[in-house]
Image (cartoon, rainbow over all chains, first blue to last red; front, side):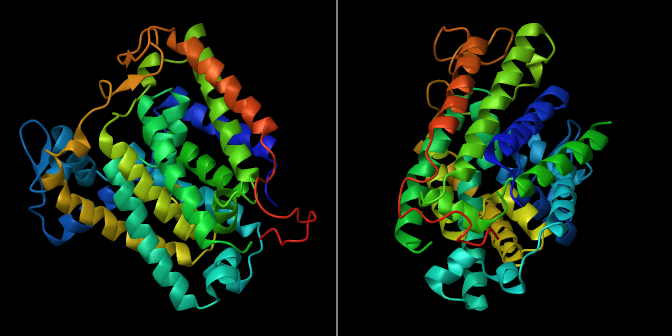
Length: 181
Length: 197
C-alpha cells in the first residue's frame, strides 16, 4: 500500500526538515565512496593515514577538502554513514509489510514488460545502472537526496542545476526505453 | 547523541521512502516516462513542505541557520546530474532508493549497489585528472542560494530576502504538486487495473 502523495509528501518533507533542524541536510551518495574507502583501507592500510591535523589519503578524492572523506573512512561510526545503514532498517520494517512476488523481487514488472523476464539481463542492467548513477552522482557532488531534495529545499543554486540536468536526461531516456507500461 | 539521531532519522527516512513508493523501480520509471506522476507529486510536496518548515523555522529562530549545508554549483553538477539521470531512468534506482529497495527485499537492487561501489571507485580513480578541468569551474560563485538568507554563511545570487524566497518557492512547489495531472502521456488506465506492486 503506497501512501497517498499528500500524506507521503508531507511525511517525507517532515523527515527532511527534522534532519536540518536536528543535525544537517540528508545526503546518501557520498557513502558509496566511504564504503569503498573502508574496503580499500582494509585491503591496503596505507590508503588512509592519520596526520597531525587529521586524516589524508593517497587517493586524491579521499584527500580532498582537508581529508574529510578520509576521516569518515577512518571512523565509520560517523553520522552520515550510520544514517545510511539506519535507512535499511526503516525500509526493511516497511518492506516486510508489503507483499512482493518472487519475480518482482528480481525483475521489476516494468522492466519485464519492456526487456523480458530474464533475471540475468535485469541484474546486468541494474549493475551497469548502478555504475552510471554513482559515477554521475559523484561528478555532480550529490544525488536525488543531497542535491535535489535537500538542495532545492535550501534554495541552493546547485540543487536546481542538478535537477534540470537529471530530469533533462531521465525523462527522454525513460520515454524511449520504457514504451510499455 | 548524533549517532542516535543518525539511527532515528535514517530509519525514519528509509521507512518513509519505502512507504511513498520511491523504492519501487516501476514507480520511478512510470514517473519518468510521464505515465504516472504520483511519485512526482509526492516529491514536489516533500520539497515544498520541507522548505516552508525550514525557512519559517529560521525566521522564528526555532531552526539554527548554521545547520544549512549548501553544495557548490559547478559545471560538473549539470553533467553529473545528466549522467545520473540516464542511469536512474535505465535502472529505476537512485543512490538512496537502491539501498532502501535492497532492504525491502529487491534483489536486483543489490546488483545496483555493487555496480555503484564500482562506479564510486572509478570516480575516485579519475578524480585527480578531472580536478583541473572546466567540469570543476564554479557557477555564480559556487556555494550560493537563490536569495540572500539572513545569518547564513552563503551568498545569494540575488539580494532578495532568502528565507522569504524559500517560503514562496515552497508554496509554489506545493501548488504545482496539486495542479500536476496524474499522467501526461498514454491512455487513461482504469484505476486498479495495473497491480500496484
